[in-house]
Image (cartoon, rainbow, N blue to C red; front, side):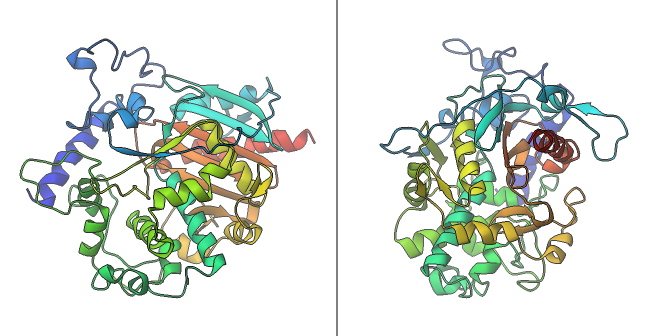
Length: 431
């Protein structure tokens, strides 16, 4: 089966998803729709990986909270220490906060924005205190939810730590650490170019194009079902050597998830350990998490560094709060303060601007974080509405887990970004 035919198969799934998108958050509620209910569930209520239905809206609203029922995973142990305390002082005024979405003249309320983003769970922390928390559908306080590309920021932070410690040289080439990639497009890219996604690699994540390389990447990792006769790469590390160079490294930022898979490989190579274990030992087991998390893995047990983390809302909030506090939480310095400071500073705004993110003017991308250094904001972001949004000036962390029917966050940024700012303004006004 050729890449084009495989892409066409997945493109059909994406088209089916888009066609059903008009169902709003209430109409597509996974509890109301009875996905996977019954023993066994009726045929028309099944959500499966093998037929791609897990990625067809509205089944996604169940799937994103139940990925370990569908995929092979590796566990991330929370550690033996008690859970760190998250004080609560819930406010009743934030639902009524209003803002004007980008490109609109009509105001919208915060709670209406949650429906518009198909939120499954959302939490706001202010000065380390939970002031707002909501759950929807099948997602609960104890439900690990698919993080998608928020995973990148966890691994970017670890890589930045290894650079700080001298275990990883950001000026060295990828081939220096991973000879297996010498003849690939990544061979002469530097570690820094991988971290900031300024590599010149022939690779597209355009889900509207059945020829896009993202489909071959997903098939290699086992995320999407493989068609009969599939003879492509088996596993993420088998796929990466097939990529070729296009243009020059370092010329501009272009968002390509394969950079993070290389980053995961680099982390594994310099530590001599499975990158999932490194994430557990360096971050997850030190946060004082409430719950174990888990990572989607390929057929070789390699974690999907670009998007495979599944964790609860509150535990993501612990990670966000730790980064807001300069790397310190749970009575320990988990990430060096210098690393967090450099992440907050961001990277080249001009390189980022070439990517054309209209809702993110003057932002940049650094160490796998999205950074608005002018306003003290940095964020982990994932498709379908996942985010850890950290506003240093407002002393605020927002975590949203969602199952928006359209993948690209450009579809909901015009609502989400002004909504976050409006809440930040409200919180700062109460100082």
